[in-house]
Image (cartoon, rainbow, N blue to C red; front, side):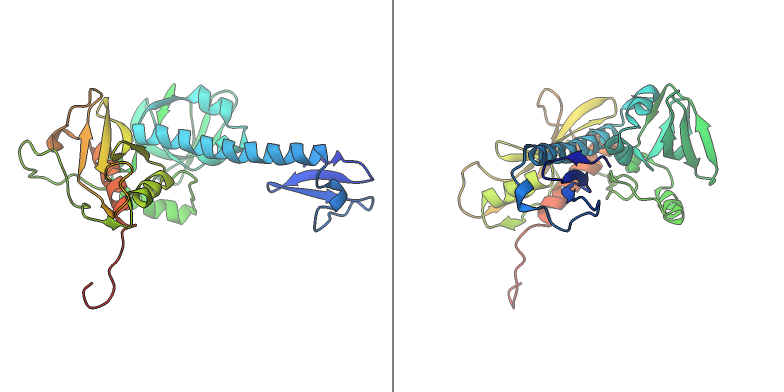
Length: 285
């Protein structure tokens, strides 16, 4: 923490995202003195704090995108961003798989400047790896996921990016031939289309036209899961509709062709939207 001179015998610094001050006694003050509230250096630190908050959010979003898309990430890239606290917080303790040993899962603990990764494997051993790339696997792709979760609990692992404790859905067998829609979470009623769209965007999903959508890269290609939320500008009650998937050209994907990650993420979106529905109370509930 660096202290900056701010005039009238005061110094200021950023502490846990907040601008604080100290006087000539070098003791931190409980509140910012009135004489400093409009000081240019205080304003600069406030803007820096806002940028740092946005940076943390951006790092988490990028790591989440790598995980959801199962994209290979160069080890050299991880080593380069690791010194940044925001990147480190987003990456630390994520389960990773090295490209040269796809059956070995470990929790990332460190990345050195030479491109070496320190991980704790599922035997509880700390090992060092130097693969060219790694994958941050979606939990639906992890074998023995329950065992991985139990082991993570034993280690006291917490993840800033939701990975091993992410809600997952397995695609059921025996889907109807040529079926393209799932209606498990259809019929969730909201006061208005606006409130349903607001829930979608608040959860991090994109709203386009009458749909809430999320893009996933699965089985080598990109698909988009979409849930109908109602016509734009519709002012009356609105309900969640069916869930379907489309390829890059906008064509409907048959349910039996939807990959495991795309299925899980689509169902996760549909369930999260449905969970915000109006709940009837009383005798007619």
